[in-house]
Length: 342
Image 1 (cartoon, rainbow, N blue to C red):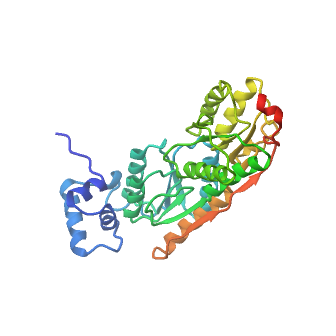
Image 2 (cartoon, rainbow, N blue to C red):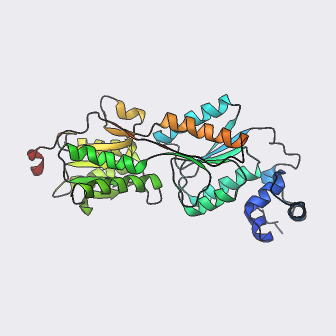
């Protein structure tokens, strides 16, 4: 009969204790009584548990490894962010292992378990999405940093952009240009960054007495191809907004590509504001008006938070919020009456 393969979560469930207690006991970390430590190690001996094929001589213990968990490495914003984090950690003699979750909660939980079982030095999540992940992070004894996200009840270190303010400023820019009918392409419903940007947009519209037309709101998964698909829906509208805000640059560029192929001029026929300021946004052919999240600064701060947490495990958690910056390029222009008939 094939023996069951146990994880730290399984052991915690069997013994009716937290995963953090199991992790601390197996890694020799403080915070667990001797009696509980022996109970856990005896149970592990009984079931033949070895953390992720790592022998009890702690083969990985001398390797300074940080786990980076993110949703989609193909997203240019995450690529730039990870590059900065890796460089900063490498300068401090830490290696990084990147886990691509495809925004799958089950995968993210399993990656956290791997980091625990292999005794990684720390854990960073760039696209964490829900309370289940927050609870898991609060239970782990590993140093952890949340990047570009807010999670309910999460108690660790984090760094993020003020995404509500970013959404507000994107809408305000268009309102100041005279636009009144402004559409919005949202991101995943589970993404705190996407939610807050949309909330900022709604607040700006409310403050200026402008109605939101549900026909002008679409959801996306942050991909280029999705932007192209939404462009087709936009083009089929009998009446179109004069301006649009898109949740990220990648989706925006796909949307613009779809519009231009149909003969629309940006910004003559439609003004667009986006978020992230990825390198492609500043190219001449794109020249995208966008909100910068300061990805390099965010990456530096995330790495510093991690190193500080490793060196000072008992220090108070920090939450650092960066101010968004509107970069006004060539995809927005003042509203004109001619747009009403477009």
